[in-house]
Length: 372
Image (cartoon, rainbow, N blue to C red; front, side):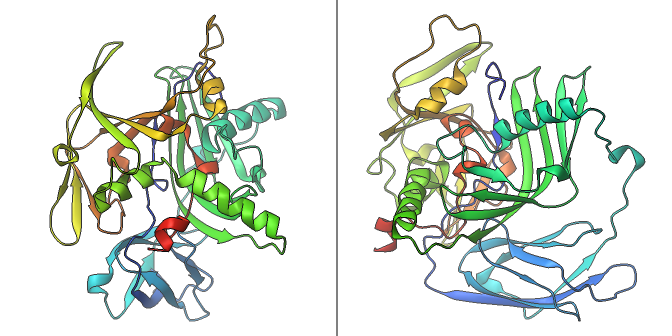
């Protein structure tokens, strides 16, 4: 990561949360065909975005997706050479059959990127890795297994670096115990404005181990990754235990380069509302300034925010502090914590620092929640 760049990250897959009401289990079934000829598509990947739940379509294009927890979910259908198909389902109203028609993908000539220089590619990959995988406590043992499928394009005029991958990225996180299959739709670093944006869908697969020490490490690290995260924050709001779980929220306003944070905390009722028995809503103006007072910043965060010419970088960690704003007027969250449009949320601070190496699957529940 260019340490002078302040990361602002749209969390698409990262904002999918652990399911708090997963007592009931559902399944959906359907078919995958080509839109042009209605021929069945065999071997298509059908999965719940951000989860460990996925299957392949059979030779007749048929599939059954099982073990779906209650709530709202995004079902994704992927197959090489076709456009992505997605649908939002609500287990309160599951259809008997879902038919996906895949549109053949046509690549423009300018989409075919040739690696012009090995040295440039290595530099661009390091920039990509630091801004995508992250530089946090779990990043060193988080590896992109097929990095050769990534191409880059740097635009000098706009000072932007874009990344493209025509196959899914296979990411092994040995600290959390997952393989993450990430379907990268968009990635861009804007050096001029100091922002990072990426978009895609994820499917998780748990790693296995016979060593108790390894399993214990995964459990401990997963709880650390969850603690203080935006997922934890959202779930705490839904449970009505925001402040009991260590979160403090204040109003924030910005004018040019100045930031103004209110002296007093604000009630969650001012920015988070229950709509009905199924949905909640984030709705606020300006920014929310959120501090997690049960955990200090990781030292790697202090290194990441220190500029190259900073003569007096901060040496001592403080409580984790983040800012969040709405790109849109509001965004809905279902009772399980699923955010219907995560692109409506923009983060910086500690939540902007947490990236793929901190990512957990949809159904993850910390030990204390699982025992409730």
